[in-house]
Length: 510
Image (cartoon, rainbow, N blue to C red; front, side, top):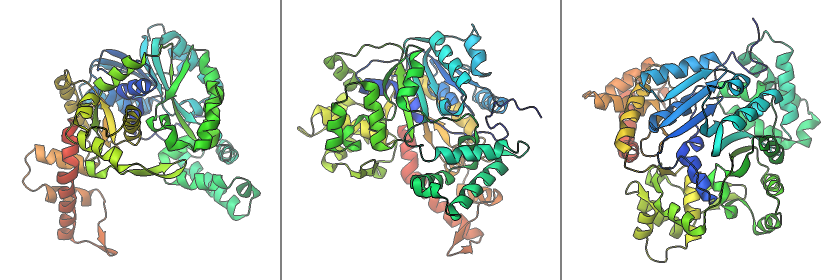
């Protein structure tokens, strides 16, 4: 069989994943956090491009939750495109186009429209130099002035130790092209284990490689095959990537991960002082990666921008709506950072969380509800950035067109939930409030369907479906009988009613 994959894994489909930070409203807010006005935060008409869209789930959710946005999604794998088109068709979406094409074809196609946003998630590190040049050419020709590019990639120095081991894994696969990627992955991991057991000095020189490999093993095999076995992989120093994108007239704007914007969460006082003295933005950003040992970057670049005046930026902040995307009681005030386990101040964060528990609110409305002198402006905006970065809060679109968005998201969510009996891969539903997606497990999807259909005993139905689907229920090492399975499902349903459905209601999903 001819190899049309150019060294990319093609016999194993990629995972159905949703990337929350590449939603237009999220990218627009990340730009605002850097004092720059950018498209996407008001639900306004946009042209949005997802290059290397994989299974197309993110692109389809963006289309469903932003009906004013014309979405163009492309991937060179026809299996991905066929599946994505099927889901979009079932959802009745008419504002998304899927193209099966490589980057060079798209760069030369005069009919490809101009875009306000171009997103590349999990693409740039896994393709060869010629394909990257085609991407840069496409961006140069098709990104509008003032438009944004989101790009994620494996980063140096975080992959410095793992890179030689990963290269050996690829060589093992290339030496036996007839072997499936699943088998090649098993062999590659076994080789890595064998080297460690044999006392390879590599693991003494780079102990972090063993830690990184153990973390990777916990990920789905379909993801790992693409991550570890793609031939033309490269981890980039930030400055090298920025130099490549400069050919498309792009300037670095900031990280799409909002917690990266809050230095006190990531750096000691001494480290912050060192960074303050590094005026060159490329050197400064590279030094940040060196301090953190960053393995993965999510960057936003712009094709021209003008920083807002401070008062104008403040007004944009105050006008922006936000919504909790976690149950209020699940919002933890501790989380892992490069500095270790970081503790947020309860007196600062709890009043903000309690305010947003009422539903989507503008920051101005929150300020009006907070006790006087709760915090200064810098502390408040830092709190918002951290809560968004940790996935507990999201920017919300204006309420004016929410009814239109709700019609579109309901159709998409119905199409997803209709497949919950057949597959557990589609774990995200679309929100008309955020313009993005929210993770909803298959059991919850099936329960929501049962409720909408008025089924009298949903626990019995879901228990039978779970057993038929091969799910194993045990207690104290013993398989549960039928009534025990029903009781277990009833307990899960009670938790869904108490915790999950109120959240989904706040997000316009339930």
